[in-house]
Image (cartoon, rainbow, N blue to C red; front, side, top):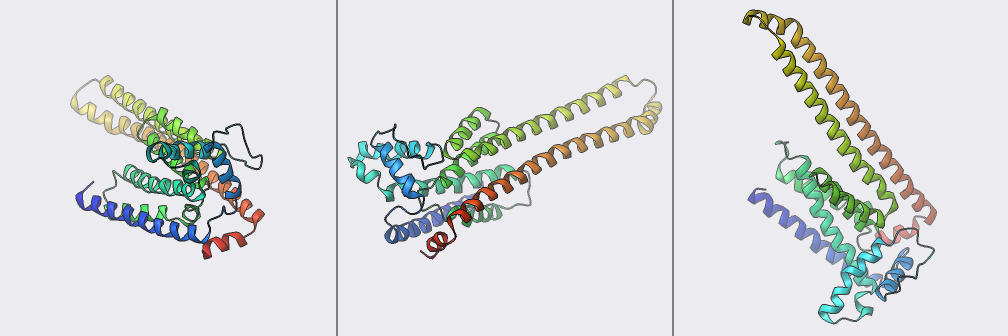
Length: 292
């Protein structure tokens, strides 16, 4: 990372966090009580804060990852600062956990863009920062940053798992994928996506290795004079290599198309679930939230 890019990224993430803090403060002044699904999430987290891990609200359809993570974050504040449990597990403090996750999402998105486009010299540091800012402020996710929902933490662990997958840390990626699954069961799709990406990469490497071996075997098997070698290469070897290269590229493209189709299906399925929830609850609460 160049110095100018580092300064730009620091300014972007600091500005985004400051803006989020201002919006967070304004929303909490207007809506102090649990809002919409927070009526289920907040009491459940507060029960976990009190050590009542056997208590469970049957209206909650997600796994307890958010509540366990919340207890792990806010409990040290009780020991370090001497705060009471009612303070650290209040609605405002629980919402603030998602604000911290949003900062992590911003950083992870930047790292992912750097990793994915590290060979593309046409993508400048400013473009990466701007793309990160655009993705981090995506309305579907950003509006729920200020509420105690599972969205922000779920995205955090999913992005982290994919980043570790790209760096080849598959065990860490699997662990993070499990954490994301504990936030939202639908994240199992992204865990499968990471596994499919690894399989596609291994197949591509195997095909390239096999092609290189066959090419070396043909060259070493050729006998005769230099002119005969040139003639043989020009009339038989090169077309064969080109055909095999074409077959390899075709196979690689098939794998890429398969992975992309899996992504599209995942996007459509997740959008269907989200829109189904929106229609089931009505648009009026979302309009009230946006107007705040």
